[in-house]
Length: 307
Length: 307
Image (tube, rainbow over all chains, first blue to last red; front, side, top):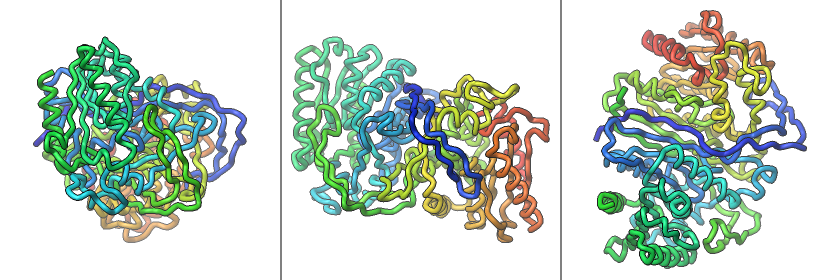
């Protein structure tokens, strides 16, 4: 399918200039075969900004664009090609007529990151291949897939290559940058994954007038109390398979089901999809990378049509 | 102008799994409102991989795609929108009929980065706003533009937000990943900037059969000796204004002029464009962001037509 695109590009948004002082000045050769330069480690540095890449269709058939917010230890590449090279959700939703905005969360990917402890108080965390395999519920142990998994595990290496370091100190600046993104783009649908889905649910409460719908794929957390201003914001929760087979996921699954119930009690339109209960089996945490991902795209597209 | 696009997406290439051991295991709450997890700091981690984003036209009118290689402390966002929001070179060259591949160098942006000193032996370097302003030749001192600069300095903040940390220990893995990229994509034209242009000149010598032309924008370095196998690889060098007004640039400018001379002596087609000598004044190091950047695109497009 050919896409007719009016404009594609990117911008950085949010963040602020931060001053660092008290560090020594270095003299070093920064690129091979070039003169040594003085590296002044003090001064003003940009921090907490967010990178956003957009694709605008020549004839978008939808009123609102989709903002894609990735999960922890990942970047916007989550929404591009799958690890085994199939088109990703960016392409699926462009094909369905939506303009798309894919961001890298603060501190990740093209959003850059800042010096610690001077700017970020904590140290980075690196995700090992074993942790990724298990936490993303590809299987019980690195190299062992669950029987019937939908994740294209033969291409796991490519997923592992897309993993980036993370910190635990930047939730507030990340939410601030997402808020700035909504202010810039205007009312949007948010499709968000894992940690990104927790941010999206929080943002719906913070800016209900700017969030036209939230699709929360396996959110790692939920807001403490749903706000009644959320009545204008339909919510869709989607959970995959093998949730009970990694200790981490039980609690977020239960919390998001409870939150869904609280939303409904308040009169908010909310749909909770447990894929195995709908007889869709074998999905990993990486729902957008799984072999049957087109079924999940279809499910979301159908749900969006009714909103 | 509407672009008809057959496929857009991304992949990671190159790199290898590296084992880390001897570190303690941490227990921490990684995302707010979610259960604490055990963070095993040891194990296998992917390192030295490269992120590549491609756009393939429905009817590309050129035999070879363009690979865009950015400079030091930057990412592939260099080739997207300019800091003041005009379409970047990605759009210009797509509009001219070329498929495009924009990579983030190893250790930068969506290519991820790895733990030091266990995987990278050296420490990251952070570029301050002052260093960027001066080194990119926007002006003599942060906030003071050169008279007549073509850089959209009122939007400098957006350039500064696109800066990422760098290391000095990854030239070889970066060249290896670029080589893997050429092996995957096949014969290509390389448009490269600054440190990326030094890598591109090196790669032309390493894989002359895969490099159809090199456009080197202000390369920070050049190979020690041109290789006579380069006779099949036309070279274009482009240098902007105010080169003598920052101590760093004099030497690379002279070296690239000498290298150009050596190439010609060997019978390699090489063109050296000093923009001020052609009466094009005020260009910064960020030629792709300058207000008159369309003139430089035109110059390159004209040159490519004759190759």
